Image 1 (cartoon, rainbow, N blue to C red):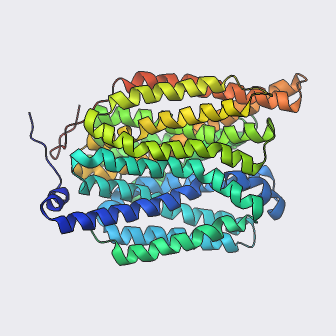
Image 2: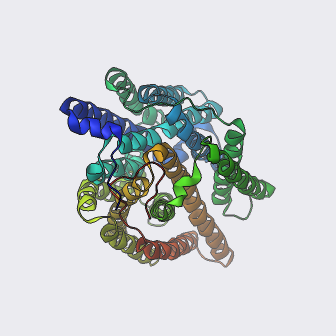
Length: 491
């Protein structure tokens, strides 16, 4: 049996308490900064109606505030595998938080819609760098035996931040104008930037690697085309987007195929923009598949559930946000305990029951109607949140732990990319099903409330069916060896 191999940085920390304290400080700063930037990803969800009124734009235009953000993330994240190898921890942190702060300031002062969309693109450029930076740094600095516990904190960032974004924006919009969404986030971002400039040190090693420009172009076409096409599908219900939808998806599929082929050629000489040798590990591959399904479910429900609460049950923005808050809190409170359980028992005993809870919650949401009691919806959301909490930490930890250290940056970039594509796919699927069924029921003479309820019910049926695949996949996840020698993969 191969002896466990720990990264040099983790070994140095174990030998010197001062190094360990420095590493912990860097990780906590990265965690806090990542929480702020990811929170911003879903904070716009409930602000769309106010923005439409204030900026005099229609729903299709307003959707670009979310679409442009996701599109930028999908294009930038695959490049972070290269950036994390080429530049220091400190340089990446300062660049990411500077971009995010600049985008937030521009959004707060935006005189019109076009500038606001541009500001969201700048924000997304910074956001895209933070999560891969955090995960690569964590995998490099934290010894394998403690990774589950630390990755539990990452799960708080990844799952709770987007879950409570609508709650926070709902609270703000109940009392203040939409610009305050950015004005409140801005000083927090600036403080994080200043603290990071003072305390974040270079804790990872850099390499002089060359970027392959063709790979960047193919990545942008592939991932950008897919996310944009999926967004168009969600906006139109998959029926009225016209040729733009199919052209975008075709460009995305072709670009992604060419990108994969290019990486397979380049990785033979270690020059790939996104090294796909990470998929040689069955543990990593299964983790990525389960992450995609889980993220699709989470983001789809984040979009569809507020629509049901506001358009069918007629709750106001603040009540909707408050109803979704307990689920976010459950995810946050559960994550550290899940991390400790992972360190002790491995991923399967957590992921299997987690996937079952998510599926049960989604199947229970298929029963919603015009007069469903609010407590039932709340209970289903809390159960789903608990299930996701049981899944995310083990999947992140086992997946990245299954690849050798020199591929951590690539594995982290793949995880981030999967989150964006999975989130876009989940949102597009559920909204497309919802829109198509609502239109069909309306044409059949149903009232607006009944038609919308029917559309939402069918959207949850689609999500529930997909969740069954996660249950099957959960039985194939296992804990990788404590650490892997260079060039070897966990099976």
